[in-house]
Image 1 (cartoon, rainbow, N blue to C red):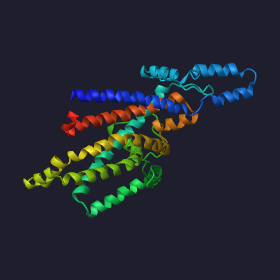
Image 2: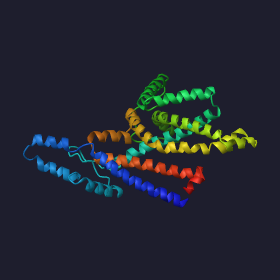
Image 3: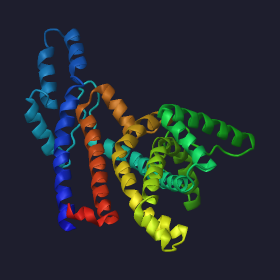
Image 4: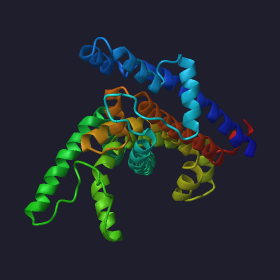
Length: 337
């Protein structure tokens, strides 16, 4: 078991190094972050601008060869120096504080949406498989295909409009607005536990539902298909022939083996959920990871975008590592591979 985990950790580290190189190369394709400022300098001071432009490129480290810049950036990044923004026309800001602050907002949203999606998807998938071709099964099949077909942006906008009308209805009753449809509380949540819980629910409810809509449908369809396959397996028929009751057969014998495809899907879909967070945070005005990515892609800031990509890659690879370990719990035969 320890050798299996150690081997997977080493593979994950190698994948992360490869991902960092690919991300560094992709960020170069965005273009020169200093070019627009340099052009402005040349127009204002045609005779004396070149020295200032050369100094700006040297300060940003953009005057060095590609591999030299990559090695230097990677060395600084792993030691905690994530750099600063490089556009001389804007006040330089440290990359790490901005990424860590926005990460704390986005990770909570992504984790809550992912956990709720998995739980809801598994529950619906199991019930649909056990009640195959029932009204419940047909109804949920139609609903999940509706979620598959709707773009996330449309779902987020519909939820936002619904939240605004719900708040208007509360105001008409003399109550305060509860659902937050724009912006994340800059000072966090205030008051006692009950007040903070209500504030937290009001802030997270609509964005979480928005993100859940793109993933729970997949989990429910995979869980349903996997459960139907397992329920028709010989060992499940044997368990029923031995006289075990239906709940024991479903939850003790069938459910565990039907989880492996869902675990795989959960690990692979984390990147999709992070991408969904970009749209969700834009619609609801949250200054999370997605908001920062859109903002700094516009400015072509290489170190901010690189930090976003590497942090996202770390989460995706870490979740795949966790999935590999969970496989060994669900199916001990995997340890021998």
